[in-house]
Length: 95
Image (cartoon, rainbow, N blue to C red; front, side, top):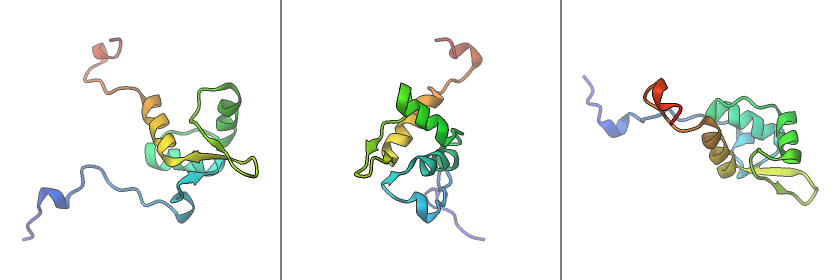
């Protein structure tokens, strides 16, 4: 029998990202894939483009070639903010 310590069992499973998604800044299509894999937030690259135009999406940098690049930390912040706060019951949702 093996002895498992609590530190041997992660609280949340690690996501094994493809090499293309392990960069500090991601292109729009990569950002959409990252959000789906890591946070379960489905958003199309075209929707990210619309958010970049009208607001409401994750912050991004304009690259040297005018390509929008999304910092991974900003994608994480935006996804968590979009999901909202945790509630313990449906009556907590309106508070």
